[in-house]
Length: 212
Image 1 (cartoon, helix red, strand yellow):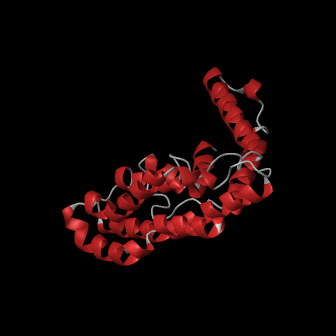
Image 2: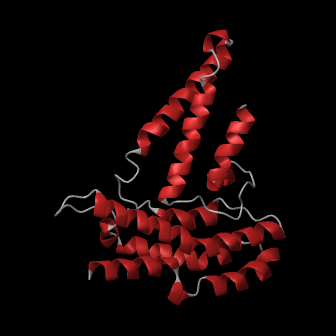
């Protein structure tokens, strides 16, 4: 059961799998939309219900402790779901900063397939940021009272973060890819994220249009 639970969770959270050294969904980002959050919450509810079919009193001490830890984690995950939009999505640690850092530090390239997966993730940044931007707009529209800053507004206060994210996204393939794979990744990355269409630029331009 443990392996099956982990596989189901990592299918929805491929960046977590990458952080664990696994290649599950190595060319994908998590679905950051409301639908993605709903899918992860539904999985937590199903897995918690399945866990509770077991009587913890019949387990040995070590297994019972694991049962209790898993139950507590899933209960917290489900409880947090209602508050999923009650934070700044584009603060100093938002996707505009964490995504390039993840590509540079976590996505390892040890084969041609890994290099292709890296390019696929570069190509997926625009969709990922669009999902995050949609979430921020929804939070600002549905949750934030008049006159209170929230949702997307925090990005206005982080101009250096926008510039840093833009530089990281543009430079990541040159800094990260081993020389044996540069001929695969750099040309594709150059076509995927030209400077005038960098995802960080898209966020900046979208926010400025929103302000107007």
